[in-house]
Image (cartoon, rainbow over all chains, first blue to last red; front, side, top):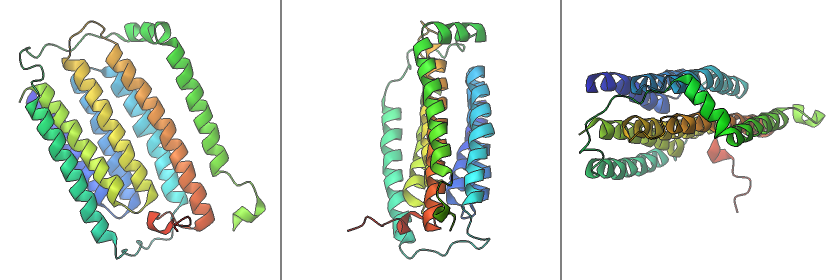
Length: 170
Length: 103
């Protein structure tokens, strides 16, 4: 079982790491799509099939399209951007900070006695019908609020990104 | 290391990869993608605890993940619209050059 988890996790982490390193933005976006598909594979491994379905539909389907549109609309020609002289210092500082956070988190995970006294049980059996009943029963108000959030956010995104004055078209 | 700790270690590494990308890169779109990776790492944590935790309510973890995915998608759309608007005004999306308010 751990082998299956590692088979999911190593491409996931590798794709994410390479995506954050590349200078070509479209390659980064496509590698990140692979990373999101890896996250969906993790959900399938854990037994949360509906979460995997939602992940593929939202991230691999919709967010990746929005990201690629943004990348294509903000291109500055095919030449790669020139290297900033302060980029190396910023990269070093960013990597040191992320490495410190990683060390703290991994140490905390390894040191906490998480479920060590409980045998790894089978995945909780969650039928989609039960999930639907919970969403529309106990969490109906949250579901409506998320609908309003999505509507307002997308309307706002369209308003922000649209051209409103003729002098914006420079 | 039991499986729950392995899952948490994987999500911690993904979080730190996203954090490194968000802190390091100059392009605003890549910073937003780093933030998306961090949100995905948090969702991995939620599913890991749903999988290995005690099971009174089998749906709560997955419901949490669904709401998190929806709100993260809305945030990504708004963030990328802002990047497009900045590009329209300044013809550049590099963060070191977005320093008009710098004193």
